[in-house]
Each structure stands twice: as C-alpha cells, then as structure tokens.
Length: 461
Ligand code: NAP
Ligand code: MG
Image (cartoon, rainbow, N blue to C red):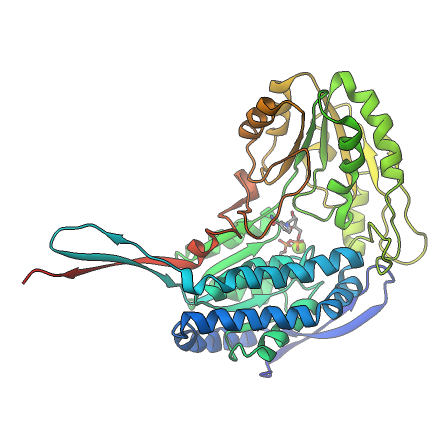
C-alpha cells in the first residue's frame, strides 16, 4: 500500500465489550487526504476507460476476496464494534453481495437514444470523478459498501473515511481490493477524524460527490459545504421509526419480533423501530406478550454464536443513552445485560404518558424503546408522522387494504408489513424529510454516481 502522511494523532481502537485496546491506528491528516484525492483523481482517467466487462470482472474478484476473508472480517467487527458474530458475518456477506450485484452494472450502464429531427441523439451516463464516502460507526462494513461499490461500478474512483471509532474492517477492505487487482488509487481508505479528513472531502474541488451517512446535524453541515462547489451529495441520516401494531394483526408475532426490530445492534441502527405504536384496545395484551420477548433477548459476549445483542460502541454513547432513562423514567420492564467491563446497556421498554417526551421524539441510538397507544388508523398515521424523521417503519395488520393505506400514509422511505426487514441490496434505501436525501442500493443507485451527457450527431448534410 502507498504510505500516507499521518497526523501525530494515533487512535486507540477499543473493544466495546472488554474496554481493551484492539489496535492503534495512525490517523491521516489533511495533507494525506489531499494526496489521496490527487491520486484518486489520477486513477480516474484509466479506471473509467477500463472495458466494462473487465471492470465487472474486477468487482467480482473483489467479492471473491471478501468471501474468502469473511470470517476474518466478521471477527474484526466483533472486536472493533461489539457486533454479534452472526450479524458481523451477515455484514461481511452483504459487502460481498453488493459487489456481486453491481459487478453486472458496468455492462448495463445504459443511456438512451431519443428521436429528434436531423440526426441521432444519444445520452451517456458519465462517471463523476472522485467520490468521497464518509461512514459512521454503527454499520462500518455495509454502509461503506453501499457507497463505494456502486461508485466504483459506475466508473468513479473513491476515497473513503471510516468513523474514527471503527476503522478496522474498512482498512482491511481497502487491502482486499488491491489483492483483487483493483488498481492503486481507485479505492483508498483513509482513517482519520471527520473534522479533518471528512471536511477535506467536502472542501476539496476534485471530490465531485459526497456520500455521507451519519447524524442529521453533521449531514446538514456537509450539505452546506457541498453547496460551495455544487458538489453532488447523498445523505443517509437519523431516524425515529414507528412499529405500528393494529388490533387485527397477529399480536403474538408482532410482540415476539418487536424487540429485535429495535434492540438489534444494541439499537444503534438508523432503522431501529424505536417507537412502538399499539392500538389502544390491545395495548395491555401487547405489553403482556412483549415482556417475555424482551427478557428473552440474549445480551452477552458478542463473539458467542448465541448472542443476540452486544454492548454499545463507547462510553460516550452509553452516557447519551443513559440520559434517556433517568431514575424516574417510566420503565415498564427491562431485559438483562452482563456486569463488569464493557459498555453494556440492558434492553429497556418505556411507556411515557406524554407523546412529546424526548424519549418518544428524539433518536436515542441505543436499546430503549417507547410504547405509545393510538386510537384508530388516522391517529396511527398522525403519530407515525409526528417528528422530523422519515426513514423506516413497520405495519402489523391482517387487513390488506389497511396495510397499503397506512403504508402510503406514513412519510418514510422504507416500510415493511408484517415483518421488520428494510435494507435489501436490490431495492432502494433512503429517507424522507430530515432522514436524508437521495437513495442508495437497488437498480437506480447508479444514477446518483453519474451525470447524464446528451450528444447530438447531425446526419443531414
Ligand atoms: P456523525 O457524528 O454524524 O459521524 C458520521 C461520520 O461523519 C463519521 O465518519 C464522522 O467522523 C464524520 N464527520 C464528523 N464531522 C464531520 C465533518 N465536519 N465533515 C465531514 N465528516 C464529518 O454520526 P455518528 O455519531 O457516527 O453516527 C450516529 C448517527 O448517524 C445517528 O444519528 C444515526 O441515525 C446516523 N446514521 C444514519 C444512517 C442511515 O443510513 N440513515 C446509518 C447510520 C447512522 P468521526 O468518526 O471522526 O466523528
Ligand atoms: Mg459523531
């Protein structure tokens, strides 16, 4: 790998389940970010010209490298982010699958032929240049892949900044890309601070697009910075998604699955269904069913195959989450968590009397859920839409018409009926309102990594 100049800052990566140092990582400084951007700009001219089939083949080789190192990547994520081993294996597999999915794209990056008088009119989808991908700590592998894979497939080169807390799997992916034969400079991973390396991506003229995933607060600043260069930007931001449970649903199944829709990844999931809205006439029955389900969530050493939830990412995150559960909090019941070192937080169910309670309105990004009653369908939609976010959500009902009415009524980008799935690499993902801008994944993601060029060729003399 090319050596990059680093700032004096070296960062100690901490295992959140043990509080032990995993590794010390050298942090890139602004000069290193600039140098990497210049190299990526240089690599762009040849990368965009590689024959489409060959670019596809290189992405498939990259997928094979990820597959061959899947267990290593997964174990690295358990140690770095405290993800359960079963989740971490899925996450590494997701990078592989996204690479495979978009490896078909270079040969299918179709333009159009548009009927015009006097000649032939053709559109091309041209790559943008250098794409800067800025990744948060909650899903280091998948969120990186959703940005860098379609960017590369469309013919762009990529500089990627992992979160300061979780650089290890992204750094390994950068090495695997080189092992797969992706040319030097095409995909560069730069561990560093957001305020330094991320900010350079935003400010540098030669970065033509930013893919940012993280907090709404930083996302707004990134968008404002991009405006200086009319830089393209995709934002995936926060959420406070509703899990809407109607009385006519399979209540047992709704209650059995609800904990996993919010406590997965210790609630550090932008799609977490952290508000459960329950039709009032079945509220008490739902809570009776929810209690054993919450207590059954296995919170333990994330390296164990049986683990369903690990620790929070950091002490700082633990303090933030704990602030939503003060001594007088309306706790209905809690699950369990290990004692001793590690940033453990037991799954917690609140029943706030006031729907304006900050536990109901703010993104907590931890294993805390609020359960709120509603009166009827209109009330459910009103409550679900109450707030600045619109990322995800679930609807539980056995009435097909109601399922579609409510799905159309909720202002959110990704909904699931009678399940909690939200992100598939073959379907679009992104937010309404303050949850984001643009869509990732699926067949259309390539549009946000290309600009349309129109060419008219005169055929008359
Ligand atoms: P964050 O503070 O916004 O950080 C996200 C990334 O931006 C990190 O890599 C961070 O670097 C970087 N950054 C910070 N300041 C920057 C700046 N001035 N310019 C450029 N980059 C900068 O968010 P977080 O604390 O990592 O993650 C939690 C939040 O992200 C939650 O609100 C959550 O909902 C949201 N999120 C949304 C999605 C989604 O898909 N919609 C997915 C995951 C997370 P450092 O690591 O150095 O701070
Ligand atoms: Mg932050």
